[in-house]
Image (tube, rainbow, N blue to C red; front, top):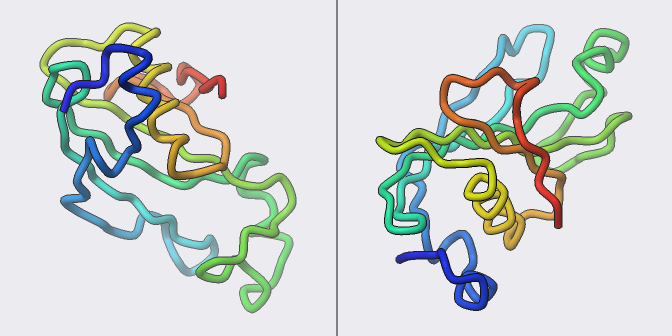
Length: 133
């Protein structure tokens, strides 16, 4: 499904465009809480793309080192200092420009209210685009 017309894309939600094709846990698990990493496939603006979403801590991992392991994040407990955000890594045959990445992030925001960053596959996390809602 294409999502390039702004009036059309305003009506779309993430799950109408993307299908989850994989899920795994990332992280060590012995000292830090593992993070869900979900792989999605779909067509965005007439391009077939793969998106990998990862939940990350806003303030780094320091909370994991100063709290005992019994007091860390539960399955649905998002209360650590600093909060969380969603990092989206995008893989496509044709590189998406910054405005496309922004629109992709806005589409993701239709189903998650945490802050979202979007980046091309090989870009560093520090080069990610912060999604404007």
